[in-house]
Length: 264
Image (cartoon, rainbow, N blue to C red; front, top):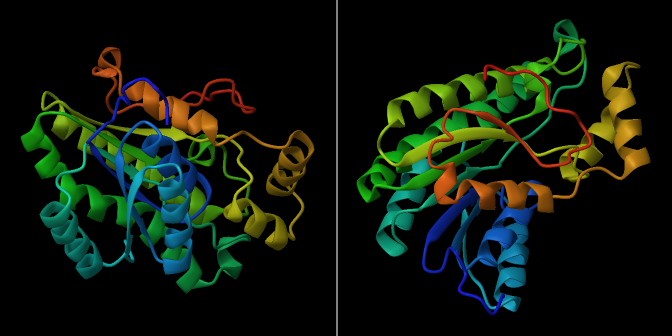
């Protein structure tokens, strides 16, 4: 922890997908800013690992095993968090999967639907459960992790993932419009080309030559983007000068991929 007063000291942060990858990095990074972090995910062992690491840095972390794609689980999560820890000042939806790699006509419906449920429906459920309480506080940040794939031309191998992120983008814009003037903002951001468990799964399952195969090779060759860039972006959103940033598609600083045109 820094010798200066942490900017998030005493504030509650909730991060989904906190057991690994971008979610874990964000949870650790915000704990280093003084936040008490609620770690949410489906794998108890991974959440405990993240919590133990945060505790080793003298931070505070509370792991809660939850399937954020299930209504009852999210309702139970909200009740526990609000009763035991308080209202989150920051909500980060980082849980995500990339199940389907291949043409739609050859897809597995269960894998396709699960991708939509985790990547799109779960942020809706989590935001719905907490945003009202955040509004009562008069300040908050809702941050949903999207992908540049949502802005790219379709190339035939990742329909479920790209569709889920397109829907997440529009959902976040809708939420942001409804939150205007409340002190709570909602934005999406592309975390860059990060070598996470999702990346490893994509690399292991890409069998169709094309842009996705080229992307895997590119990330391998460059080493990818550091998750620290995502933490920096979120820290920048906490500053007073970022109060007007709402309903935007944001990009990490100095990412390997150049920003694409979105709606803003």
